[in-house]
Image (tube, chains in turn purple, blue):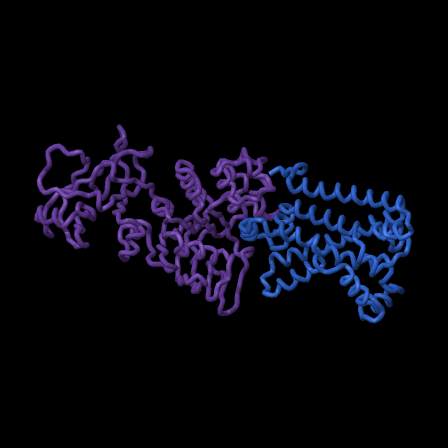
Length: 365
Length: 223
């Protein structure tokens, strides 16, 4: 598959629990790109994914992908999951317990399928599970089993991969490694994917496009950095966590300190995991971790002191949100008392201080 | 010992089990996976033989197979003889009588298969029927064996239905249990006790093997 395909979803359904799903989603999925459905649990993300997969029929639903109409309740059209050419990976691996790893992976592959496509062995190789071929699922670790589940979903060459929190039940190091591998695998095979997650770092690290789902509705959709940096409203902001997400690249890394450049401005970041110079990353800074100084301090522990200009001040009760321009936009949350003591007003020249340990780097997809 | 009767009972039990496997598996599949609202009615009908006296069931089967019913007449025209008091008639009655002993273990095991495995299979392009064949059946081996063994054992020991539908024709419808009854009527207690003991031992061995299977003492799955 070489071209982008338009995924168009319209779903309206009143559940007996009182929950209402009301989703309109039109998104262009390029080969190898990832759409993240992000939101708190119970927001309807999984229900939406199951609707796209064709596992449930709802009152009013219209789903189309590329040239194919998958469902249209008005015209009483329904394409069963078997005919949608999708791959599906659940939170738990759900492998067929009576089949070996090899038989699990090749379960959906029809004999005589196109030999030009990435062979099953290559997918197994890329996921590092070739040596597991003859094992039964009960003899696999959680990470291994989820790799097999991914290989099984990709082996029949789906035109769309659906991932329902596939990394959530894994331990942290495995989760990070597998996320990276899945990105590479999607790029290599040119498979677009939809990923359901409530993990913000995962949404940032995996998503090209992020759709924020809250209360059964898509509240905001756009490029990952934009959605996280500029939430559409307060409810979206609180589900995302208020944080600046700054596109950056790594200049140097030494002595446990990483130097990144954001729009030409240098930031120092404490090293949490090894990252190579030249890597494209997001630097994430929470507004409550930014302090404002009016005089040059003597010796302070914060590694970053950035010359900044106050752009705007908005009151949020006893807390004020101060928007700064330090060569990029950065918000600081300070108490009204501090703001009054410092005599801050729009246009004032100040310094923004951020500790190196308060900045989080996320590899950019 | 009445070996003719024993051999007849074994033949009847084996044939009944084969028929029950053939119709019980699709029926259990339908009960588990159908979304029809009235499927509880079918479940109730399947379970009826558990509570009905064998004489009641036997009476209806006898009337249903007789020359007064359309089914009985159609069969008589095709086969040249009627169903009552024949081995075939006994087979029909036994299948109905043992239906829940096959269908209920089958259905319980099918229903216990993780639904996400089925959804994974469907999403991989495998049809519902092939999913049943490739996933549900292999994961339901214990339930299938339990159903098969129970219907065999249950048919081996049936009495009331046989008496109603089959009567007491040596080599045709005289089963073990009727042979014991006959022996007692004839005050031949020695013959009755020999045959009874045999039936007791066989039944015990069969049930013990079912329960050991359920605890997977012998048949431990590889997975």
